[in-house]
Length: 113
Image (cartoon, rainbow, N blue to C red; front, top):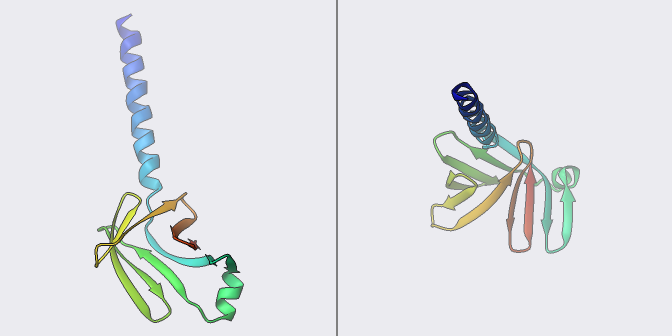
């Protein structure tokens, strides 16, 4: 019986470690480029954004800092978990599925890859 409890405890420890590793893998890192922008009901994909000369990217650094770039403008931010905070103190949540990062605020949605 004691061996069974130890085995279960060991399996639970491995499951917890795997879960934590999966969560860490879901944190953004590096630079992502906008592939879709929806604003006020109008949608533009990556090709339409490029045709309009819109260059939108976002960078997440491992130290918890980052920058959102829109053409020549840069908006530095700090991030933790799924939350970004601008230098002015505005907070925005984001979603990251390991491939696509999504920012949504008001009537604007931006997807990055």
